[in-house]
Length: 347
Image (cartoon, rainbow, N blue to C red; front, side, top):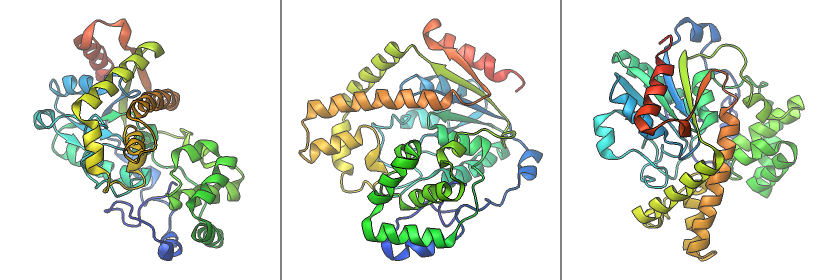
């Protein structure tokens, strides 16, 4: 199981060197307390709309949400942060007033968010939506978070306290970057997902590798057993050249809308995780005087294109997804109609 916050009702907090070992003794890596039998006994049927960044998920979801009794649950690792509005392409306040959106603006930008915490909170949100007689509509492109909500977290080996203490001491002595470099050698996919300052997840990833001889990323990529949430999932995809053009044009619109000013205003409040968000990372480099503004914008576009490619690779692994080629249909209404048809099958 992936690392999660010490308190299931609170977001993962910051780690000081003095408390590293004590926090790892709280049982990270154990079961989340919900048995697979209990999970399968009541599988709430959800809708899910997925796809890479800039593929049009939000517009399609909003169109569908106005036709059906649903509440949108954002599955986005950065839309959870308050104040990070333009760069994460959050729905407007007017849209949120018309259609309820959940899992947006739930953390301050100096806090951390991981799959374990997000999954637990999202499941409570989903149950609340169902209690109100509505259908949860999961929308996003954060594939690992989506997998955590629908399929549950990986069953990893039990924690080894001696090994964790050794890794924590190494982090205290040499810093998280030393652990991150080691993880890059044994599990580069996990290293790309974990920030060098996220010592909890680095330690867990290295622990799993040392105990099993296999990378934690391989376990995270598996879809074993039935999902714990019944769902109908639709994915949106574009030809690569068209998607990349949409990304470039969206970055230009974000800059025109004031993304630079947003980043400057949040500069002193962004934690290690939020600083890695696309757009924010590159503009922080500009504000620090390390690169020019034109270069920052070029990097935002380049890195977003790379991220979209990574998202598609991950999302294609979802066995239940029904994919729609957006470019083959005429306009938003037609795409929404195709998505609606796929989502209503066996709903």
